[in-house]
Amino acid sequence: MDLKGLSVVAIRAMLEPMETVPEELLEALSNDPRRQVKDIGEALRRKREREAEELEEQQRMLEFERGYHARGLVRVAGIDEVGRGPLAGPVVAAAVIFSPEAEYPRARDSKKLAPERREELFEQIHRSALAIGIGRVEHEEIDKINIYNASLLAMYRAVEDLEAKPDAVLVDGMMVLRLNEKVPQEALVEGDCRCLSIAAASIVAKVTRDRLMCEYDLTYPGYGFARHKGYPTSDHFKALKVLGPCPIHRRSFAAVAGCGDFSSREWARYYDALAGASCLEELERVAVDIRSVRGLLAPAELASLRALYRSKKKTLAASET
Image (cartoon, rainbow, N blue to C red; front, top):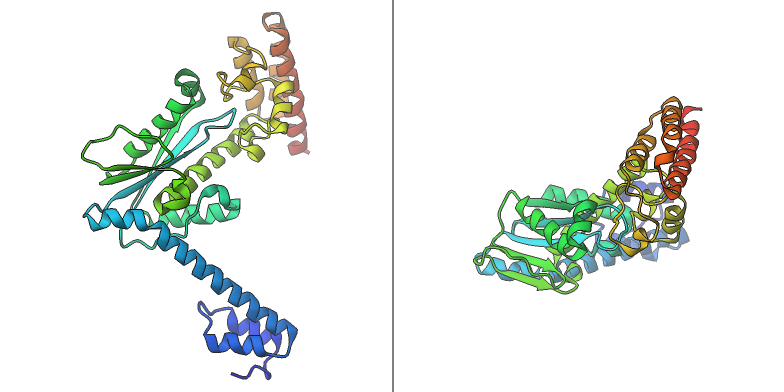
């Protein structure tokens, strides 16, 4: 194939609609004397190699599911959870079932993916999965039953949320769920790297929780939840020292408990009122109310409200200009 009569722009236009580039054309691109054309050919070849590697990895990661399919157990649920380490927000688990005929996404461990790629796969998983279940355990429950039990509870809730009940269950890590004895269950250490359904569940759980924490960032400004998603980063610790814990912080965690009690009804009420103020006028009304009851607040609680007031005022002032 001779490309000498085509400009670089024309070659790019020719390639754009092609889903698969023939080997003959790749050879012609690589053998073209023009450096730009050679680079196009090399980029396409690298892309083909990456896709082949991803497809090979996908087939490897389906071995567990296909083992159950061969036994007549069609609905195999992969389960994973995220959010054990953060200081704030819920634990979220996901359960994902693909039918044997599904167009499987090229899912991988969510921790190894860029946020943009996780979002893409999240949408692909929702299009191709037979069933998806989500389980949440909020910060109040975490404080009552501890993080390990909360993670288990989130997984149970994810299974219960499935519209199609599983014939077999694959769980990430070493956790064992007390399910119907007739339903085979397998715990896979590093399952999100070894099993496609678990990897898909890790992506769904991660994206679901990240979106929740971005919403909380709007409700409770100043902590940086949209950036760190509640994990114990240096910025998060700095915010905790200034603002104190907000209503979604896990009070049973030592790093949060060390910031003070912050448990009075008045503090919680006015914290929510400041955080929820939609305009400067409303914010100032709440500030006036706080001044009238400041004698009921502990010094650390009052300092927390003052810091939140300043942060919220800055945010609202910027939005109203």
